[in-house]
Length: 89
Picture (cartoon, rainbow, N blue to C red):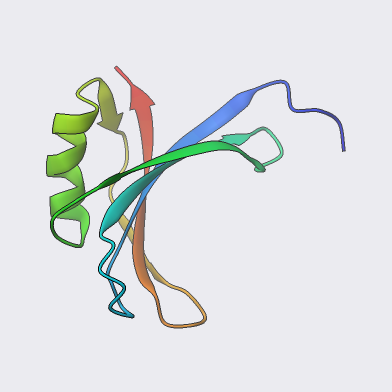
């Protein structure tokens, strides 16, 4: 596979602490034109879910904007999560 030339997509992911690990956080992922992960960063949040993710993101990264609605999902092992596209203002 060729080396990625473009950082094509950014998106946020937030989670429910389904398994009780106590680590509530939001991830910002960057993917390339082949939909491979190029980079990521995360920050802590006091509560689970999209509303808390929006609130903490506005404080931690005020120039980052969510550009789509949150989409709900559940992993094969039962982890509940949401994803939304993002862009720098």
